[in-house]
Amino acid sequence: PADRAAVFVPADKEQWIGVRTAPVEVRDLEVLVRASARVSYDPDLYAALAEHREVLAARERGGERSEELLRSSRLRLAQFGLSEAQMDRMAREGGAGLLAGTGPGLVYVQVYEDEAGVVKPGQSVDLTSPALPGKTLTGRVESLDRVVDPATRTLRARVRVADGADRLRPEMYLEAVIHVSLGKRLAMPKEAVIDTGLRRIVYVKTEPGHYSPREVTLGREGEDAYEVLDGVNAGDEVVASAQFLIDSESRLKAVVAPAAGGHAHD
Image (tube, rainbow, N blue to C red):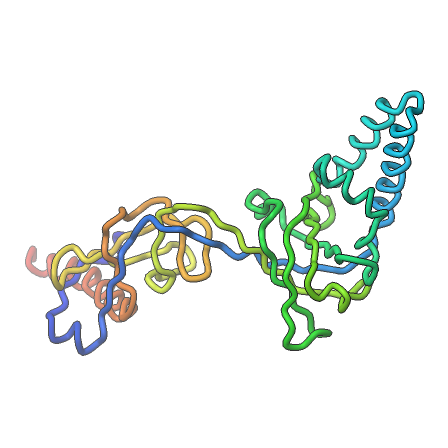
């Protein structure tokens, strides 16, 4: 960056200000998708499941047009993001869990469309509520709507809560944290990044005591690390503490150096 310059920090000063570096490395990266949630009976889904249950019963009896009706029923349920196995299982349960207190609870989590791409069935979810102080319920994502709500720009994820579902009540509000594994990604510690509001800057150790500013492009934010898209490479060492002191000296040097050059020219 033009407004920053490479700096040298003597070993004794490094120790005094507490300089610590950390590696940029390929690692397992988990991100946390935070969203609001609500315990709710879904009448449209309940009706679609009731219809599907009747169609399954008709097919077992060998009723006419049963396969055609089954395809139609499954198409309707597919709009709720359910797989065929989930459709059949939920229909057999007779909608148990769609009403709080009647079985394994279903919680509806409002996921923003820009985060929906990483939310998948099977991911674990932590749920908390002011109505349940000190209690964290756990569940798993069961399905995700395929249509974005145009008013909120969210998709609804259905989360099945097995442990503590009896504590849930219809229309209860909750906070959800979905644990999303991104697999192996190039990442760096969050504390290494200086966010100016316009850019993200890190300081790379190029040799003992020498630090060079780099502008980086970051991807998703994990609990303790950022995904790195550009600006540094695997194996680079970035400053993870005292970076603001180094940044201050870097910016000062960038201002002083051109001024000194101008005087020498006069």
